[in-house]
Length: 205
Image 1 (cartoon, helix red, strand yellow):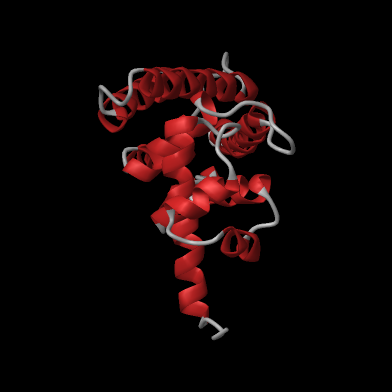
Image 2 (cartoon, rainbow, N blue to C red):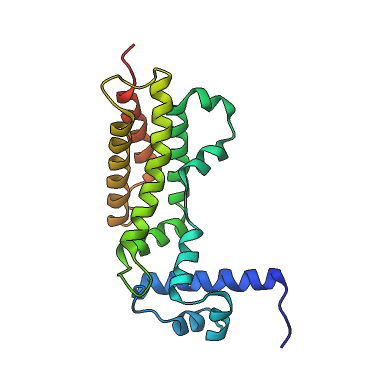
């Protein structure tokens, strides 16, 4: 058997993940086998096991392609002035996240996690959702703490409360958007809501 180049192996891996997304959204995670994924990708089951230990490993790799760590969203803005404007950093990072979510792959994979995945073997969708939420909360809290130190957060709103308020709003918006099958623009609605909520958290002039 001819050994594949790194580029060919990477392309095969991506094709398998693409096929998994399509099968999971159609049939659910628990009811989709690795053999079905391989067949849908036009490959053998051996190709799947070459790249992934099991279905859980494949599922985690699929999620990794659409992870949106908050700190990375801020860093991608590449604006050193945002250190002095933590609330603006939060707003712009949220907008960047909304832009990503409107891409078909991001919406599809998050829909799989929320609506098409049951607890199965080593796959625990609630634990994965909680991990992502905790990661986001930790980063948000750091920025709100910075805003408080700079006098940019109202005295009657603690960084912890500000984090909870924004995280709750974002979670509700995200679930409404997925439940309604993307019938509204999360970028447009989210940008408006985040801007309004952050403005309400700032001290009165």
